[in-house]
Length: 195
Image (cartoon, rainbow, N blue to C red; front, side, top):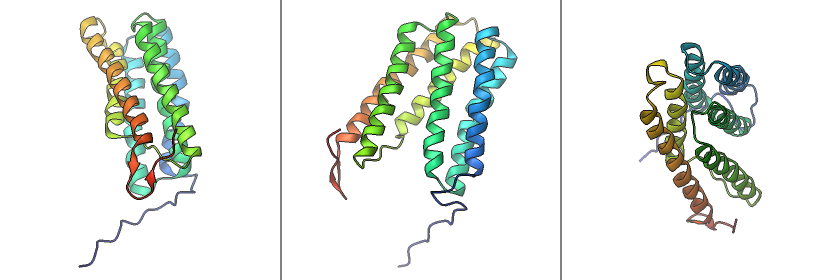
């Protein structure tokens, strides 16, 4: 029985100038003025619209990368853009007094620790791509920030806190999952190197 051939992609993994990468670079550039607006103006329709565009563009560049072909440059740039957005958003809301600093610190520590862990793993030949729980974590983090900026929910503190602490919990659990993935045996290559 013939296996279906994989769908042809437009770009190989060494490509740099791809549509997905352009969207990612645009996210990085746009993140700075949006974070400044958040710091300066807090919750209003302009800052919410800027954050919503950033969050949507994260989905867009992922879709484009899957459709046109994932690249090494994209694998580096996309997580960087995610970190700038999420850590920047959480830190700004901590400064503004919307997020408890303990919650901000946990999320920052998780993101930095997992990034370092992935670098160490890569040097030992272990690839640790984002897992499904990590993708849920990112979505909840975007919502947690977004609901603080969204004018209809800007004053509903209990609602914001549910999203904030859900994001914190998912950050911790998904971080543990990534660490476990680095130690789990791989059927095709044997046990992963100790990380």
